[in-house]
Amino acid sequence: METNVPDQETPADADDSAGFAAVAPIAIFSLLSFLLLVLQKNCFAFAFTEKISFALGIIVGLVYLGYWLPRSKKLGLRFKGMDRRKPPAPGEEVLGVLLLGLLSAFFCWVCCLGVMGALVRFTSHVAHDYDATVTKVMQSKQECKFKVEFVDEVLQEPVTQCTQKFDEAQTGMQVRVQSLTGPIGVRFLSVKRADPQVNNVREGSG
Image (cartoon, rainbow, N blue to C red; front, side, top):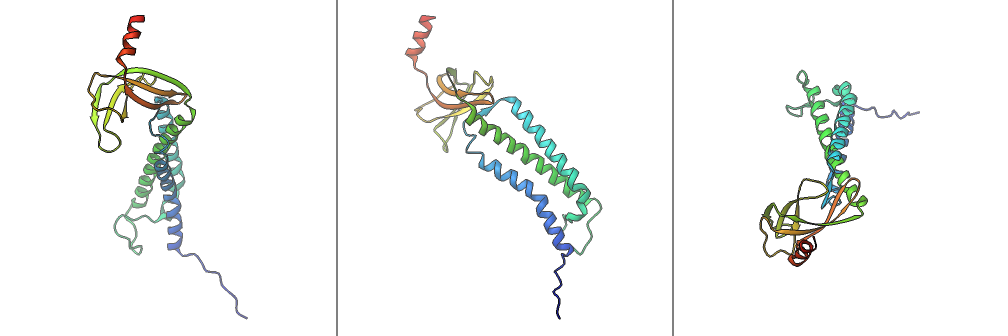
């Protein structure tokens, strides 16, 4: 009577599965960062979200290293060729894990920034319109005709936005900014040329 002997996993197969598991977090974070680009368009988060994102990236990187450094030999990383019959150079596997840990921390940081930007879109509901002075003008042939830079009243820092309907733009001109604010940041709706008559009425009433 014949008995079926189950296939045993070879060391090469074990290295492959471990390698996939080690690279999976980097691939997931990078994919999410790419998908979140659409949601965070025209959305700017407050400065404190950058610190939170950076801290989370450091934590993920440390957890990654804490798990994979003791298993560095299992990964069987190589930098010189792909011949597994040759033993790795001293410290080569550890260096490979350190590089992967750095990549995981970086892409986690980028992914967290994308999440914060996407949250701005869904949490900003308070209308905030104001006039701003253009501090820099850049021509763009891809997204819009002009990109103007101005200091946002809420963020208190320079931001750059597209201007679709401007025939010309120059430094020092007044623009009307329409935005929505929330607990995480500001979502910009439009940037238009300020109406001089409205500004004159405001100055006269003031």
